[in-house]
Length: 486
Image 1: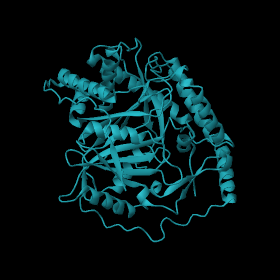
Image 2: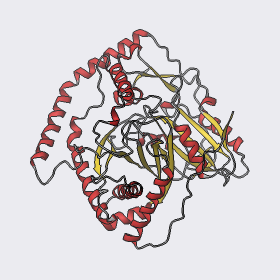
Image 3: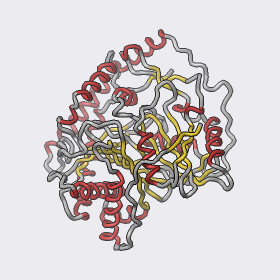
Image 4: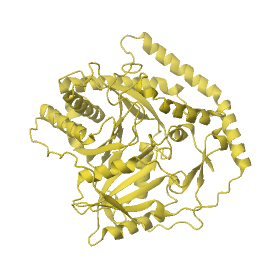
C-alpha cells in the first residue's frame, strides 16, 4: 500500500461524469513491414505485459478510505487482466484524421473505471495511410505531464529491436489489505502533516515577505496574477461531450522566431494560441475588449526526479488579445510570462499541496458536487479563460513492439469554468499540440486548430520572411461509426 498525496487525490475528488480527470496522447505508428494491425494489437499486449513492473501505475489501482475521511491508497491489482487495458478499434472507411479526432473526443469523454489500474491503450487501425494509432490514456491522479513523458521513455524503446524483458515471478505481488493498516497509515499521514507545520509556516512567511516586497516595488508588480478573466463562451459549467483537434509545428521555426524576437519557444506558442483565439472569437464578434488570461502549469519537479506523481502549480499569463499586431502581442506576452514566472518563484516557498486533515476528502468531494449542481462556474469570477500547457517530450525516436512512433499529440482536461485546454508536447524535432474542449463551449475544435496554424504562418511570414502557404486542414466531417475488436 502507498498513500496517495493530496494533489494527486484531488483529481479523484473533483471528477464527475461531466469532468473526467484523465489525460492521454495520440501516437501514430508505422508498423514493421508485413505486420498486420491485428497482429500488432496482440504484440502490444505481450510487449506491455512484460513491462508492468517498470512503471508503478500499470499494476496499481486506488483503494478509497471508508467515508473518505483521509486520502486513498495505491494497491496492487491481483486480478490484473491486460486485455482490459489494451484493446483494439477499427475506423470505418476512409479512416481519415477527422474520424480519428472524433473517436478520440468520444473516448476521452468516458470516465475511467476505478476497480482496476487506471490506464488503457486503444489501438486504432483502419487509417487511410495504413498507420496505426494509440489513444494512450492515464488518470491524472497517477502522474503529471513530465512524469508521463518519463513513463513513455521507460516503456518504449529507441530501436525497433526491443530489449528482452520478462515480468518478475509473482507480479503483481500480494498486497493484503487490513483495516488496521488503513487506520494506522491515515493517522501517521495526519500526524506527519502536523509535525511539518513549522516548516510550512516558515515557508509561508518567506513567501509572504517576497510577495510583500514585490507589491511595494512599482517596477515589478504581479502581472496577470490576481486579475479576473473576462467572460467568454469558454467559461461555463461544462458538459460531458468533448471536441478534439490536433496539429503540429516544426521546432526550428518557433525557436528561430523566439531568437529573433528575444522570446522563448513557450512565449511563441502562447502568442500563436493568443492569435488563434483572437481570430476564432472575432469571427462571431465575441472577442472581449480585455485580454484573455491563460493558466499555465509550472513544474515543481527537481531535475532528475522521475517519480510518478503530480508536482505542479499554476501561473497566470495575459495573452494580450486586445493587440492587433502579432509582433507587439508576442512581446507583451513575453513580458507577462516573465512576470508570472517571477511571482510563481516568490510564492513557491509557501506552496504546500499535500494537505492532510481528517474528513477533508469528503468535504472536497461534496463541495465539488455541490458546485457542479449549482453551476457556480456560470456566474463566479474566474482567474483565467483557458489552460495552455507545454510539456517537453522525448528527444529521440521511440518504438513500441517494433513499430516506430511518429507523433505525440496530447489530449488534456477541460474543467468547470475553463472549457478549453491547449497542450503542446515536443517529440524529436516536431511540436505536437492538442485542443481538448467541452463540446458545448467549443463545438468546432478543428476550426480553432486551423486558426492556430494560420497564426503560426503569419508570425513566420512577418518575422522569418517565409511566405510559403501551409497545407489547408479540412473541416471536420460528421461522426462516423467505429467498432471495437476484442
